[in-house]
Image (cartoon, rainbow, N blue to C red; front, side):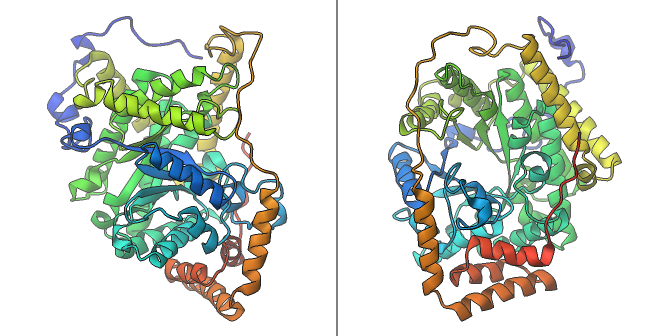
Length: 521
């Protein structure tokens, strides 16, 4: 790792060109460095979400009700890999993966079971889904309609950030430009039908998990945001109608003060981009609203109880950085999906910060700190330099297609791992302060028979559905894909006709084809 440039002490001289009026302002006012709401947590707390999804819909429904009973204010759904990449549970590609890293959702019946007994117009739901986000949103809306919920009151988020999948995660399906078309269709449809729903959560989280630096996380996330905004504008959408529903998703990592500064810098930089570059007029279009998750990549299998401390520090940085919602990881997640005990401790971590620590009593308490303001300025400047480089490469789509973004992250990840391996960077319990005896801890286990039961349910659904209506709805999806009409009405009709996630994804694969990754070394 490069030598640490941090000075032993900071003074006013380090902020020679700093202007409180220009660079800070007040909470709820441009450039929103101090937060997007005038009262922040004195008005209302951040939304406490706990990311969960395990096995099948019935088991996940039980976990959601457990979390609600323990005080969580919003649901956050994890889907299994077949659902994420558009394969049904009986597809050969799904063998051994059904329900393993999230809940398996094949059809509207699964979605009904997932949210059974949960009023969808009274709770906020976040769904971590990207390539198949249009289908999962349609399933959510279809279930809400069946329960009589007011669609205008549905609140929540689909992650729907496909660009970071090509960069860092890999659960893509379609070529980039077709995937972008699906996203802008969702923007337009949701503006009219689900106006309180966030149709994208532009995510730096996964790029940070892949090894990016804090400055890269800001830059690449906002560059993706710029790309989505430009695509929507090019599609004829009014920026001041869709931009207020954009949301972001950041990682809370280990360097506590750097993370606080990162959130502040990202908010200020996005406000300037939206006002000065895109000429948005609505102040809500300038606001960077974001969800935070503590850093899964920092969790260790060795001495996993230490992860409770790591998570608490990371969560505190997110709160002091002004997050709108927060997920705290279970201490056992380096080993398995979290047990109920681990999930409860993670939620209690947020509740203790909110009610016992006192940090929510005042807004942006680090404002004016010489060191934090220097960090904020430095991160904004570093991110701006990256954004200029991306512009010079022809924009984010071109930078991704060339593999430049991926290479930058890979280089940062390699440098950090080299430092850990050499002992230059300390990971407690891994390369320092280790112990020989590692006592076992209880782990969450997924029933191996679940996959068979899920496939049996899917087979039964296919046997009893109206085949003519089902086929007609899939043909309509293909027609809309070919003809350029908005895909969402056709996808909604298909899920209501009992078409499955895999079948709808396959219909679009037939028209759009599949993305072929360029190998970057």
